[in-house]
Amino acid sequence: MLAKLPSFENYSYSCTEIPNTVFFNRIYFLNAIYLVPTLVLNIWIFIILRIRHADFYKNNLTFSIITLDTVVAIIHIFLDLSVVRLFLYFPQFCPQFSQYFINYPIINDIIFPLYNYCRVSKTVTQSAIILSRLGCVKKPMKSDKLSRKLTPLIIPTTVFLPILVILNTVISKKEVVFWYGGFFTIYHRKFVWVSLSSLHLTFLFFAIAIFIFSSIMIVRHLPPHNELAERNCIIHAVLAVFGFSLQGFFQSYYALFRFQEWFPDFVIHGQFVIYDVMTVG
Image (cartoon, rainbow, N blue to C red; front, side, top):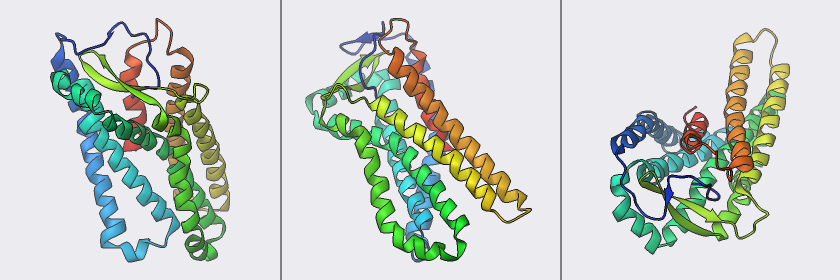
């Protein structure tokens, strides 16, 4: 799901037959090997937090954000498996299903912004979780009271912020394009000066800064000789910063070089793995 069309030599204006269809099918199944268990796990987490033990977790800010993060992850993975990667890696479906997306633009008007919202949302929810944990560590005696007070404010804010990034995709024209026998969607920016890549990159910079700062502060405020908690905090921060840095690298590379003739095809495939680091992790 790209912001604007690069000059790929394999791009075409209709479904094309390719000799290595099975190869792309295998890429999809390799992705499904880890995405399906992740989807099941997120559904199970949601059931625990909001059905089985809802009374216990509903007033806790951290678990409310985790619930939101879980819901977004479920939607994200579902769209990947049922739409985005399915129609990109299964050229067999192109002739029939691409026509639905072309003839009924409302499908892309919903799916394209929603998919990109899910991608951006992880940046916001993970930042909100680490800040919530920082508040619990700094003021442990008041954490429950603060949690109940801040939840009605933080949750709507966390839901709203990604909309700022994907708003241009909502109001812009979408187009179905064909590549390697499959198809995907691009958008033509209504406001040319507002780039999905640059806005997302800005959010990623803030997320990395928040994680580094919050993790340092959490470690400083932990009780003395609590080495296990310190190690877990550091590992979590390193993994999160690594995942966000990968996304930042992709957004920077794509924003700077997407119109170059030498722009490599594998970057389009690689973007899925880059985002999967945070979705699965």
